[in-house]
Image (tube, rainbow, N blue to C red; front, top):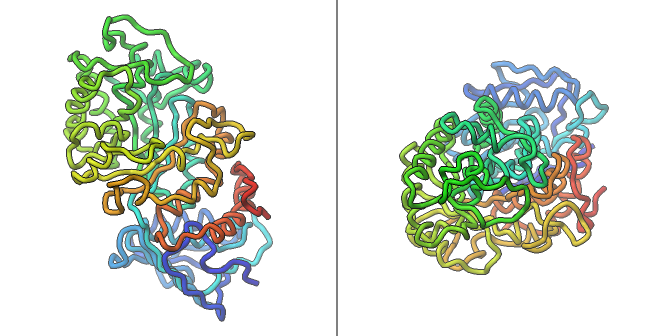
Amino acid sequence: MVTRELGDVIPVPAEVRPDAAVDFAIDSGTSISAAPGLEQVADYLVAVLRPATGFELAINSGAGAIALAVDPELGSESYRMDVSSQRIVLTGGDPAGVFYAVQTLRQLLPVEIYADSAQQADWIVPGGVIVDRPRFSYRGAMLDVARHFFTVDEVKTYLDALVQFKINHLHLHLTDDQGWRIDIESWPKLTALSGGDGTGVDGLGGGCYSKGDYEELISYAEKLFVTIVPEIDMPGHVNAVQVAYPELTADGVAPMPRTDMEVGYSSLVAGKDETYAFADDVIREMAALTPGPYLHIGGDEAQATTAEDYRTFIVRVLPLVTKYGKRPIGWHEMAAVDLPTAAVAQFWRIEEADEGTARAAARGNKIIMSPADKTYLDMRYAADTRPGLEWAGLIDVKTAYGWEPAERLPGVGEEALLGVEAPLWSETLRSLTDAETMTFPRLPAIAEIGWSPRDSRDWESFRARLAEYGPRWRQQGIAFHPSPEIDWP
């Protein structure tokens, strides 16, 4: 008996044509075939279906009952799912598109599919056709590992949860006033002095990644079609840098380590050659480690930097990113400077307008939308929920869902948008459970905004589809906030 409708997934697909007369049953005889180049996706499909079904699901070179194929005419990340009584065909415009078709298939199966041991269930997929494509090429989440460090395994677990909603970028906030979380060979004291125990907020959650750790994360993310975007925050948020290297301060005196949540008090010195030697080395090493196209240089909350010095710093540092083959992203404050066309500004504030971001969009710069009052996953759901902050307001699920990126800022329309991102700052987080609880169920709302056609979004439809995800998170052991707006089963 089919309990799911063909379009009952998140994000909602672009086109759904159900056929109530047919469905497909996965059974012990079901096999999988994959076109050349899709072997990795086929392995992933087997890995997510085999534990709960108990079926072998052999991969063969013939015509499998579940077939994976590529048709470039569908477009990047797009896919088509054809479900008949005899066969399921998942066709992507590229391997990423096939991978997203697999995520849709998982959501159409019974909740038991997420179990890690064999279950008794009818593995029925409703019949019909889905044709789907992303609205934006950049659909991101950000994890702050600087204020509270998350291990390699914790980040992998977080990635596993994100990709179910077709998120394709993970922005790692690697450095801040409290700690430095990535090994830099040319400046080894960064992690030796500012990356260990006691360097998180309240002295908790310290740690750092070796280059091998970071490469492991990159490799894992690539298999999930996720691009890692590393952030080295400059010229502010650098107290941890200056603790390790006092020569990067104005007076050559190391500041005291900081584990509080204050911001805006630290700054690199725009007039010192050492500043740019440091920036060059760090950007060079991070660019060499990162295969993705982006490198985030921060640029936010630089209150301790004068406007003139901030301009000097941005003008000198942005070319270093392109020098090492990457496209610079920065928080939208950097749009106070006339940016090179390749630079991307990430808007994060709560104001209703921003002149610099609008000017950058008019000049041809792409914009990532992360307004704090809609997308910041570290904001509390309600006044009585913990953890979280509330400086940008309380963000329930309806608030996270009920905004439109192309209308958020005057002068920043659809054509200017690279995409959307939901940041999770970690000042109040103490565990992966905290991170998951703040992420879910709001992240799916941002994911649907980033993927689905604008005119397809509907709150009542979304909240009904989201409700069905509660048992799926429970089955996977993923923590989530049981928001009262949703009628959880």
